[in-house]
Image 1 (cartoon, helix red, strand yellow):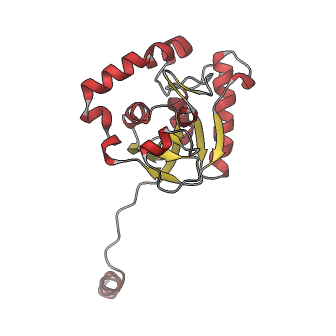
Image 2 (image 1 turned 60 degrees about the vertical axis):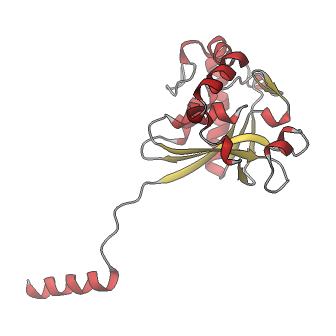
Image 3 (image 1 turned 90 degrees about the vertical axis):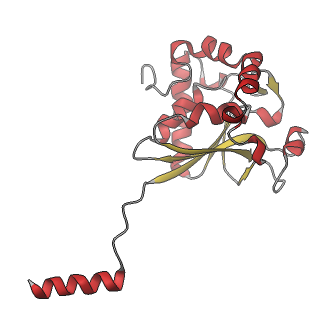
Length: 208
């Protein structure tokens, strides 16, 4: 017993104390119109660790909001979601994403029109690409529409560029202004019209 204790002590000295198990953290990058809104919609999900607003899809490095909103960069307003996949799976995150966007509008979202507001699922690997495609088909089935009517693009992520600091956590820092913008833009009215009682939820697909 003394020999075993001595060996264990020696092992701790050489290797150091065992680190606590780390959360299985994954990332998803999603575009769904105004990033203030999508950030706010997804950050409250159980298992989501952090949501950051930014830009993806274009070729311009480190773009500014002014450049992206000029509709010349190819970037979309997007959010990077860091999540613990032992608490929320990617497919559940996608369900929440779908039910917070208008999947029939490929020219923008709600009152915001233009390439920078197009809905896009940016995938980081082959598994995400398969799950994204499956989620599109499931959304179409739930809505009773052909997949061809769904105008959300699915494309590999090249890079996510964080937006300026004043865009981060905008809903929390500017509650009154954000609430007015969201209401005036008609986001929730349209979500309710499209998704009914499942709007803004991550519930399992109807009939799935």
